Image 1 (tube, rainbow, N blue to C red):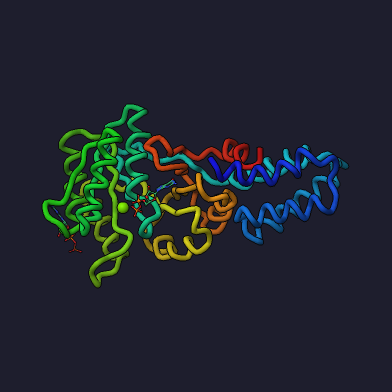
Image 2 (spheres, helix red, strand yellow; image 1 turned 90 degrees about the horizontal axis):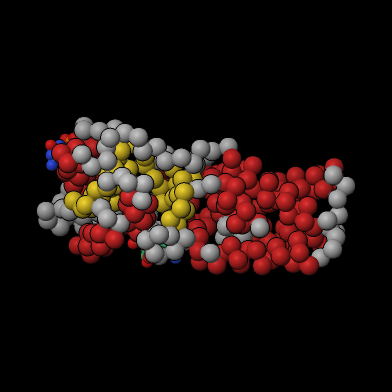
Length: 290
Ligand code: GDP
Ligand code: GDP
Ligand code: MG
């Protein structure tokens, strides 16, 4: 939660220590929003909204401004449905994204998260090229209390591992299937082709409930650009924003949802198994703005 404290520290002066709203307040607020990666468009639009409200309500109290900012953040997030759709049996979730963003870690945490609701989980190690990736997933899955389906040999067709994972779930009545995928290929084949094949093969047995794209908050806009191919062709149904604990970039959350039009469904806030939460706009806005 360091990021929220980081952003909050800047806002504390603004909303707490100072007595009135003046030109400096607006400059400071603009600097804080840009610094927290809200991006120029949202920052400008928010400042305009807030100035208009401050005028309309004829307030000079910074605490009113803080409340208005919190409500503004919440309203901007509220137009999207953050609910994970996991009602199919099995509910198959594909986790995609570029290397290092936190896919494997998120799967372990998600196994634990849905396990806490009493759901049974199997994870499929469809990032098959590196043996270390398979072992990392297996370790996380164990922590999360999930079963694991591994490739029979290194480099096995990822689609085949995905197929076998869904097959396992159907055979054993396991409720949730989480499939880990590669972020980069070691062959000449296209990553999107590989994902397309995984989807086709899974859909022979079961519809795909969610395709979650993992984005690392610390990479900001650059990370979104790197993930563009997934957004364009992987049929993404939800976003997972990771590493919000270390980023001081909470505004990224608003920005990325605004720019992609895809709902954020989960937030990663650390490296421990319990550091994953569902996304609730009011809670997030409160944490961000105070
Ligand atoms: P993948 O390549 O997308 O599967 O990424 P990994 O799951 O292997 O994660 C890459 C690194 O990011 C690891 O060191 C993780 O511990 C770290 N990581 C993942 N999620 C978070 C998070 O929410 N917060 C922090 N601080 N680190 C994270
Ligand atoms: P194509 O490669 O586009 O022709 O895709 P297909 O739908 O023909 O699937 C081929 C791949 O999917 C195989 O190489 C396997 O990896 C996987 N697959 C499809 N059906 C099965 C199956 O019944 N069992 C297993 N284990 N894998 C399957
Ligand atoms: Mg991984």
